[in-house]
Image (cartoon, rainbow, N blue to C red; front, side):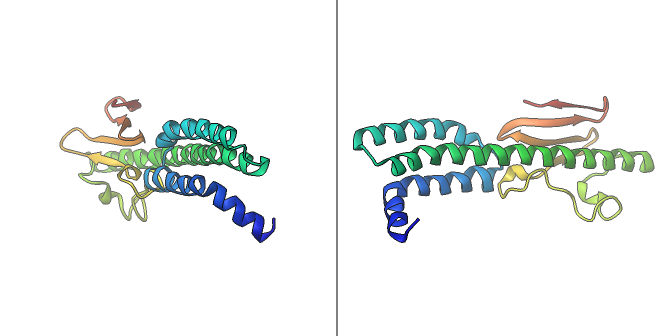
Length: 170
């Protein structure tokens, strides 16, 4: 693609490119999910179709406008799938370490940091994102509670230490 065509593409698709960047940053980098994209991308796709029909855009620009929300959604959905797989694997590791700690000490630790350095070099993260939903939550004031956010702000996957099974808080 020549520099002139690339410049024309960006001018005609500037809002979509900026929107994709914002959505990727918000959902992917900050939240580790695709929840905003579920709401935004279908509307964005329809608006792109209408804009192309009204303006009579050339086929390259029309295709770029239509593909941008689809590609953005696909990237965020893929990221979310990978993030959940990472969280599931790390959650199993943390629960196993908590159970081992309990077997060795007759009690659960007060904080996850007590598992370092004997069980982990550092406490694993639930998701690789910068938002508050990227960490595991562990509270022990008698009856330990361990959970992580599958779908923030709710959708918390919890582990029941008494029954040794997973469930959802909400």
